[in-house]
Each structure stands twice: as C-alpha cells, then as structure tokens.
Length: 428
Image (cartoon, rainbow, N blue to C red; front, top):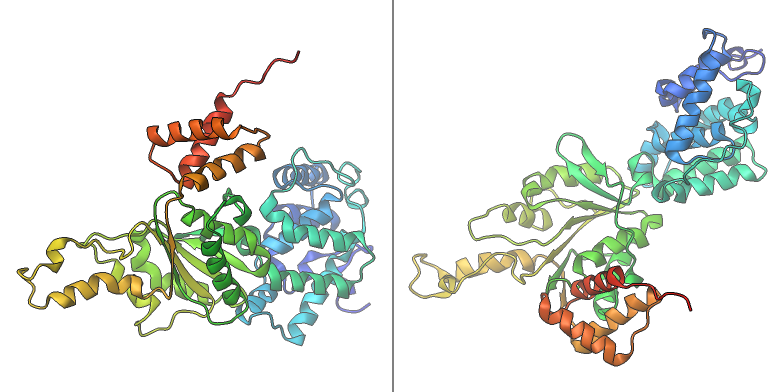
C-alpha cells in the first residue's frame, strides 16, 4: 500500500489528502461527507449530509448526480493555486503543478464515478430534478464540464478539461459573472442580475456598433486598441452597447467593471487589482460621465489613461459614455478675453484634454422620424404585434410629443406602455 492508498478506507476517498483543491476541506457539505465516509461522524450525519446537498441542489439548480455536479461547482468557484497561476500567467502552468492537480482529481474520482447512493444510503440524489434550472451565468462553462462527465473520461482528460476551463473562464466570481462593480473593502463584486442585452437587440447605429465591436475584438486578440468615449444624445443606446459587449464576448474572456465617478480616486488601485488576471480582458466602464468645473476627480482619470508614472495594464481598457463631448463643463466665460486667468488658452485646453485622451470617440445622434418608428416597429413585431404604417406613425408621434423626444429609450418605453395597456381580443 503506497502513501496515497493509505488515505483510503475500504476504497473510500479521503479529501484530507488533497494538495491543490484544499478549499474543499472548508466546505460544510464535503466536511460532513468526509466525516461520514471515514466513520468519524455521529449517528444521523448521513441524513444531514443528504439534506445539505438537497439545499445546494435547489439553490444552484443542480440536477442528475448531485454529488458530482456539486463537486464540479465547488472546483469552479473555489480558489485554488492552479487556477490562480493560469490567470496570472495568461494560461501557462508548470508540469509539477499539473501533476499535483491530477493527483487531486484522482483522489476525487470516486465522487465523479459513483452515484451518491453508494456513499449515503439513499438514491434521492442519484438523479435529482431541481425545481429551478441552473442560473444562466454559471451554466456556460459548467455545462461544458457536465458534458465531459457524460462521455467516457479518464483522470487525465478530466483534469485537462478543468484546467482548460480555468484558462477560458477563470474561477470564482470571474467564472460566474460577466459584470462587476468595485467595492473598496472587497474588491470586485459580481453583478448577479446583469442585463442580458445583446447587440442584435439594439436597432440602428450600425456604423457606431461596428466601430465599438472592431475595437473590442482587437483588444481581445491582443492587438492595439483604444480607450473609447461614446458621446451623443440621451437614450440612443450608448450604455446598452457597452453592456452588450460583456454578454457577447464572455466566452472570450471579456469582463465589465463598472465604477462611479466618486471611485476615480481609487482607479489606480482598481487597475492594479485587474492587472493580475492576465488571462482576462476588462472594460472599466464609466456611465454618463461628466464633470463640473469645480470637480477634480477627472485628473485621476486623465492620469490613468495616459500620463501617469505606472502604465495602464495591457488587459484593461476604459469605456465611458457621456452626453457631453468635452466631459468637463465649459462656459462662455471660459472663452472670454477678460477672464481673471492670465492664460485663457491654458484653461480651455484643460477642459478638453480629458476627452482627447480617448483614442476612439464614437458619436450617437438622435434618430430621425423613420429610424424612431423602425425601432418601435421592431420591438412590437418581436412581441407579435403588427401595426399599420399609419397607426404606427400616429401612436409613435403622439408618444414622442408627450415625452422627451425621439430616442431609442423613448421608443422602448412606448412599446412597454403599449403592450402593458393592450387588451387581448376575445375569441369569437
């Protein structure tokens, strides 16, 4: 009997022998399971373990072999040194660390191979049907891993599949969420209910979307790409376009990090935190950005984009939206010859220098009447409603006059109002 076999009792795995994935030792479910299998638990421990797995199956939407599915989930979300190194090196891992990770998969193999009933004395978890399906954000990569288990696999192939998963998706929150906010105490905080908008949902603005997509694809491919300022009329889809990128290119390693204007003082710290995730690409998103002439937070943004002592990380770009072309409020007094400042040109240059640091500026104008009606028609048809051209023109024009003019936002608001107030015709 070798060293590793000594950690088994009657062929039962002992998770205390794990090397890389020792975070499983801190998980209540696996700690309870280990105690049961190693005969360290009191009577009633097995029902307690089954109960905890049922709770997790319902919360996470895990089906089939719940024990194997839950183990995969934990390997995806819990931190381990293999996933961390893959992130920090952009996808490389040493042979010794690979061997250590393979050892852990070999230790856990019985949990993947056997039905839970073989360990827990009940078949209720062998083919479990949860009330709710797995959350969409957590299912993309996990579905790929579940597919591996449904086909013939070996310890090596499963270990390699998990390492490939870490390369593509990362682990922890990076694997589960498309978008994040910044919390000064915790750091990145995953946004659980991120808007599932896609670029195809945004009608019109084809040239603007192409510019945005081409720049983002260059960024994802490791080619030169620019920070982007999307500027123009309100309600034209500037913010939605940026958010759609996170949904379109999640599988290619893109993540969105939204920060507020007040957090610009922490921008250097945020960029430093993102730098270590070398296998991922981040868009730091500033929505509806503008500054009064008395606000100085813009200086932190200027320095981070260009001009600071520390370079911006290669895996980070800054995308901002604004209704103002120059971002910093400028008045006619700033251009008057009689103003108090000695060098008027310096003052003017300061107000426009921030927007000049965005290498790509994309302009969004308000839609004309035909474009506005086309947006309404598209959303109505998607809901199964077709209006005649005259009905569409009258209803859309009335809504435009009563609200804030023509825009993609007011078009969508009209559609929501129309569908909400529409009464189904009674059947004949």
